[in-house]
Image (cartoon, rainbow, N blue to C red; front, top):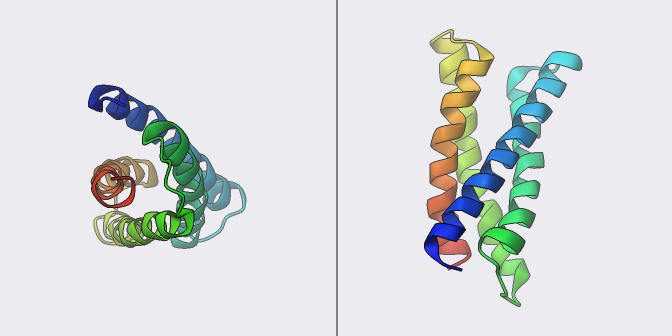
Amino acid sequence: MDLTKEFIAYIFFGVLTTIVNFITYFLFSGIFEINYLISNIIAWFVSVLFAYITNRIWVFESKDDNMLKEILLFYGGRVFSGAIDTVLMYVFISILMTGDLFAKIVVQVVVTILNYVFSKFLVFK
């Protein structure tokens, strides 16, 4: 896949992953009234699963037979970016006193960039 097509696919599925993350987060924090940090962790887990499937099949078109290694690397990268996600959510909401929506938007931009670099150069190389 050429780089332009790959980048467009990554952005497209990244937007869908972000939507999955937002819906999951606001479902748990708003409707179920679960603490925002716990809701964020749940949203992270659900969106990482969605991202792995879409990245493997449509973005990077992985043909790697060692799927276990690939998924462990993918989740390892996402654990790192998930920790950054959670820390930044805490900083924005609890320390800087921004709203949930503002915090989620800023944090998702940072996390998306980190995830692309990790996926492109370490997982689906």
